[in-house]
Length: 353
Ligand SMILES: Cc1cc2nc3c(=O)[nH]c(=O)nc-3n(C[C@H](O)[C@H](O)[C@H](O)COP(=O)(O)O)c2cc1C
Image 1: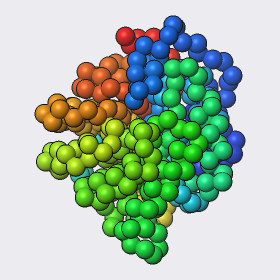
Image 2: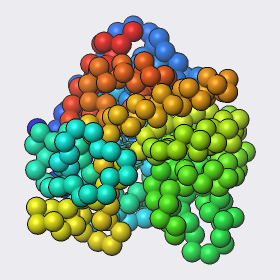
Image 3: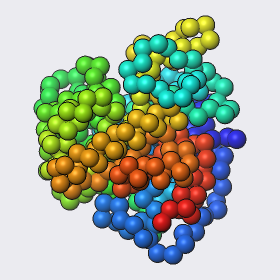
Image 4: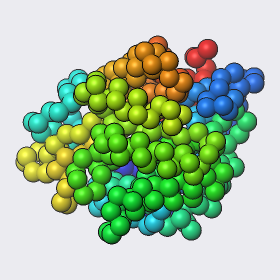
């Protein structure tokens, strides 16, 4: 089966020619009745959809809505143009069962994607210039039907000068540009390598609180989600929630789990500097997404915090979706699962109450 974002093509080729496979078809999966759920204040048919990544432009988002995914996240944009990591980006990752957090032994990764349920995603968060993505994101917003929501994902870029102030300002600029497209929900990606330190921004609690405060001041009532990585340290996660729950509207977790990927000769699988380790998503990380959801739900309850939780990671079936809801997620999103089964939105709609 051809995936709608084809891992055998470059990012640029997918952007220019996709979507492919089932998402290239015109058919619409009509909802059954009125929207019965609320997602950050907007009525939706089902609080389920596609996480940031596979939907690289408006044509992909429109196809996702037609296919019955009621939440569609437009792939993370930046305040300026940024190139993609070189091809390949998405490889099959051969992992037996769960991928443990902090694993140091390498994993075999190759282009044999038939039957793969865990994959790498190593794009470096490419972005077009705002002049390119803003009108396109506005078209994606317009493609949402009744009971559907387009989420605008963005992240900051560390400028070459200006230090922390300039980095904060870049987040604000990117957020404002997304709001101008009409996106009714924002997601700030804090879980990609934070240039310059090799660490993830989401683990820098004071930095996140400062950036989230500045962004929220700029965007006002537009709901803001923080996209988090897997936290191994429970106290650090609680600290982040304590510092930000009064500012933001919720959290989406998780992004990927990192692992060292090698080919059959034991050589680095993805070409280029800084790509020895790449993010792994899909089946092998579901345990981590579920655990983070349960921990966030517990912290939310302890604090009486009014935040929305979006569970992400390894959702390949309607049963996985239900497990996330049972763990405390108000909404659930998938990336790998939608690539493997473009009918998953329809299936979740049909089986969730
Ligand atoms: C092809 C691809 C591209 C991705 N790009 C982004 C991105 O631009 N921004 C982001 O926050 N997450 C990105 N992700 C991560 C997903 O949003 C998600 O957090 C992760 O894949 C775990 O979900 P899954 O197991 O359902 O794939 C990407 C994932 C995939 C598969």
